[in-house]
Length: 91
Ligand SMILES: [Zn+2]
Image 1 (cartoon, rainbow, N blue to C red):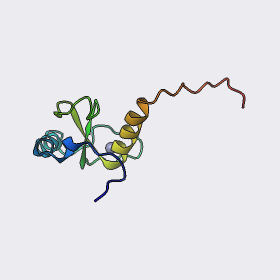
Image 2: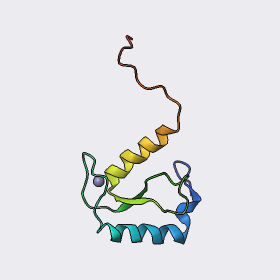
Image 3: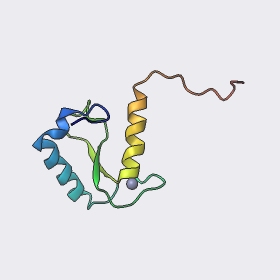
């Protein structure tokens, strides 16, 4: 069984399953992120600080799949030291 990318082992613990379900119920299964393309109904839970910073799932929010994907890709790119785009650059 191979995951396409590294998966944090914290996701395999019962602690996560409990925290995830509790968060969805607290938010009434509504997405809390509400980006463009939001489905409205949450089926996933996002670690606001990222799971590396929050391995015990203290800061969570309910999310639909499209919103979750957008915020997690923003989170993972935040770690890379890419210079901000310079609008004055002439290519
Ligand atoms: Zn959403």
